[in-house]
Image (cartoon, rainbow, N blue to C red):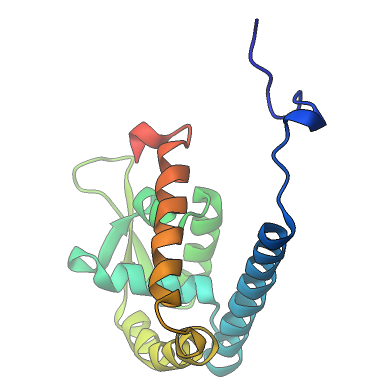
Length: 169
């Protein structure tokens, strides 16, 4: 007998969340949405760049030679390649990054942080860290922060391992 897919399973087979689990899930959704929106808004207001742009600059600044393949960058950010390509194009137009062809692979394209990108990153980092501290780290109690980190690592590991492209990651 074929296994049922989630859309075929009956309500009797569904493991519904209990009240505490539902409350925790909804708090997580609301909290992460509000946190990301606030961090993004702070960066946009103070520096004219989004949190996604900040994360791209961070990833590039931490990479060897300040550059990553576009596909690697998309994977590191868990964004679609088209979204990263669009964002990199905007950032390239602003002089924050440049795209270069891979010398080893004609089809490969690198994104590389520019001096202006490094300068903007240096300005944005204190704003970002202050927001993360004020709205997340400093309000965590006891081992809550470490527990959250372990939980999110487990979630990421499970989702990456179960992704259809997992063998490519």
